[in-house]
Image (cartoon, rainbow, N blue to C red; front, side, top):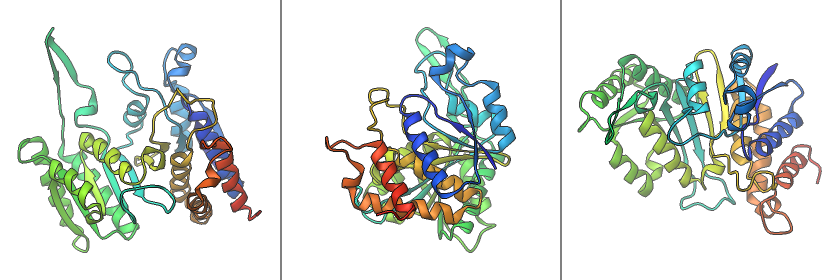
Length: 333
């Protein structure tokens, strides 16, 4: 099958190329269609997101993507946001799991953040009403809220998760977050076999830091979900160990969730774990569970014997990391 492959900016080529080679070590059934996106190709195409890249994803239905640079302030909003918008990738899925050998504050973390991707504060409807005042609109709809909460419950069903928790601030934002909470409560009634509760976002953040094992699947509006995703990434070692996917009814894009790290690009010291784990999510999504399991088993071995990730200079070595995983997959001691 054909899958769109986007290296992205900065360290994107290194981490996605490593993932590509690892996936090729477990299957020969994937044909990669390499496309471009990101700040580095803007001059070439007069846009960081060429239409042919979007067409490739629409055609292939699946993409694996590296990090892309996001301009701050004025200009093109974000390649990620545009891809989600153009392809209606309404669900951002971030499974967060701790691994032996990766330094964390807690052991046995295993939770999932499901973030609404298409509305809220990130729709880009903002303006300057005078030189000293900016206004940003927060749009919450019943349909989008029900859709994302239903996605969270279906994910819980498919993956044997026991509980779904909805994040909100309905005590203050009574109309917008109130609507999201109302939709969450309604959808939860359709899944009586699953535990369900809701929590005010600030209280939830505190509890996640103090008692993260209380949570299983968390579903949240766009802005809150963005914050929760990074907060929970910190619980498992940082963004370098956090996979991610953006999923719609027609297409899905799997991506490393960290930044482009231009300061280390090309030096061979980038951590490819986020990209590799995202690649495993992709394999599971297309039904290649055995292949994904082989990679994850090898990855766990490398994590547990962390010196295998590092070069002679004591720094993480991207190529060595990749080669150790491939060696374990092929059972070459």
